[in-house]
Image 1 (cartoon, rainbow, N blue to C red):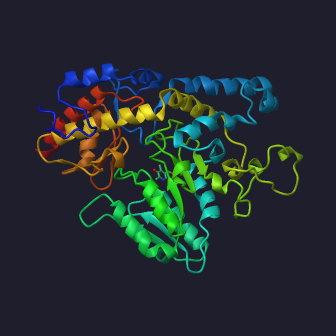
Image 2 (image 1 turned 30 degrees about the vertical axis):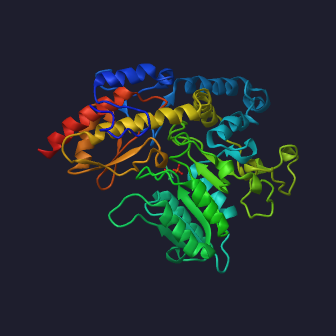
Image 3 (image 1 turned 90 degrees about the vertical axis):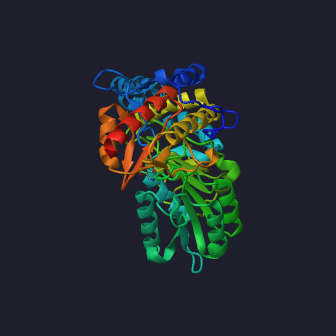
Length: 437
Ligand SMILES: *Cc1c(COP(=O)(O)O)cnc(C)c1O
């Protein structure tokens, strides 16, 4: 096997397709120890599953139970006193997550808060940052945006009196392609910029795994007077993000995908420092966004905290925060820089093995450029993709299916191994051939 044949995704990396290679990569992996900090679902045989669905629901950190149990104990022992006297007092509990969250997305602490769930945060942000005027009222989104985002955007347009057909503008792939060219997005912004109030992108796109060139797009959008929001449901904990430097206006993300917060876990929100004191922006308010010093004076007038915390509504669910705290500690220890380095290697390896599968039943839709994708590869399957997925599941491999023919596979650098990827491609090859015959 020559070094160049598989077009290694990371310069200087030479992949080969032997099991021995995968084993050596795992032995040399500086992040390998983190796998033991997660519960890996098991097959009937008792062996670990090949879990590639961390883009959909991240695995449970072993410590999550300990952290939730601690809060259950303090609640039992202290009742309401736990707000101030729990080992981790509940009143400021969300602040335990601020520093790590800021590091995760490349933000200042004042720019981030963990609160609510994703779509809720998206609406709260659009209340403040989608402010259509007579001539500037459009929202630019990507084609194939996640349905919840489409509903949210369309309903915001309607809320302001526009038909979604008038107000929602889509950046699309070229005919016959899956990926949206950055230059096409830039051209659209150049052409329609004066009418666009908000550019709202899902970074990474959930279906294709495409990571948009946020830096370039944000600069172009700002130059035309548009605000920029990101949905980082598939980006947080996956990509190296520099939200502050990129000057993105706001971003939202959920906690249960790459961030392992557990089903329905709490979401994140970023508001750029430049808006930290924009108290004249319309916003929907609740008491938890009120100035901490005077919140419990229970005054009639809302006095917002500066920064992202000022958008909080309610006192947050502590058990959910505790679960997320367990995971964020792991991210802090592993660091996004190291995770991203491994992720590029691991996904490049998956790409390498997929490209070498015999037959033409699997086509990679995700970008080939590692800089334009995260860990997920979306694979178009020729034949019955759903049946193939069931067979894979029976064999112990968990990934997911999106209509009509796409399988999404996400090797997550915190807990997936190179041997997992190798095993998966063996299974895929075996079952896809059966499917075809
Ligand atoms: C997962 C996901 C959602 C889900 O929204 P919830 O409010 O957390 O249910 C929304 N948008 C995108 C892009 C997603 O990937």
